[in-house]
Image 1 (cartoon, rainbow, N blue to C red):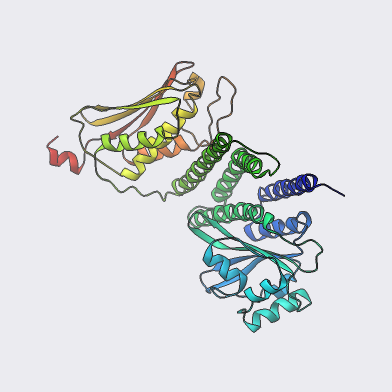
Image 2: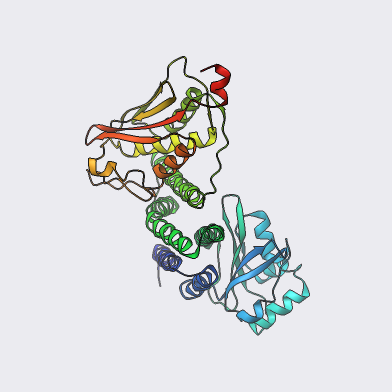
Length: 434
């Protein structure tokens, strides 16, 4: 008989295997319905308690949840299923945005008590039985504030049933599926503007980057979280804080990656909107520098602007993004710390913002493609820097949309300085008489 530790190790091994198999499936070059069907088939093979399951997506046009992919059910029969908002397990989990475990038949029956008779009949025909599931685990499919539907996995006969330990793991699976749904919907919007060849190219590039770059932070988050959950290890408060800090850092990395990919998809289809307003750049620079300083203890970030720095017309939100992306790179590529200076310069027709670090520097051959999408500077020391290769291309697109330009100067081993300019011409310049 296996010990508790051996059973826990066995469970985590199964989870890792399931995550790996689902991640592999999500990188396949398939349309969304086929891809989600493949994912559900994979889950049926690698997730032992799951005997039946469905991906229920909200269809705004009909105001119903529809099964986009299923396993254990007859697919053709399930097409007649349509759940209203708030109806049954799916509706409740979607509304609350939190994964739910229904551990007993009684809990399942209570959650399904408000299911309309027509849907109950569809479910019974699709199963070939009117028996209710023994246990159900349902997790919301969402990315940020965007909600798509619910992943529902159920045990019909047993002997293995879902438990509380399965909740975070199934939510992780749901998050991976939601990322793919989100990406696919963005690709569909792009396809409405661009031709099929351009949409396929964008899809391939984003998928390739997503599958490659998300593995590192996801693996780190999973590893540190698993370590914290080990009951047989008593971590010190200092070590727990260290692990939580590392998890927080990797979550920030994931957020930056996803934001850059979403922004570049808008840029690539010509949908990025610039809304210029009079902006004071010095306080904006101080705000972003203070934010980035909180992320590092080994760097010293300073701001240097002349007292008479003029107001310029710019989209403050987008310029914040430019500065944040450049500062993020400066921190990542100066692993030994050092000084990072954000400086403002006034010229007759424009203003120039420069951000200089004391990092590893960039070789001359890497300066030329530096602002091309997905290009990654090769760190001389060989360490891996997380990212999508989209931060600087997004910054370039924003700066050029303002009528400015962006460039870099660097020496290997001595650091890098990124510059971007913004024109002084505009309403604010006219009011000031310059």
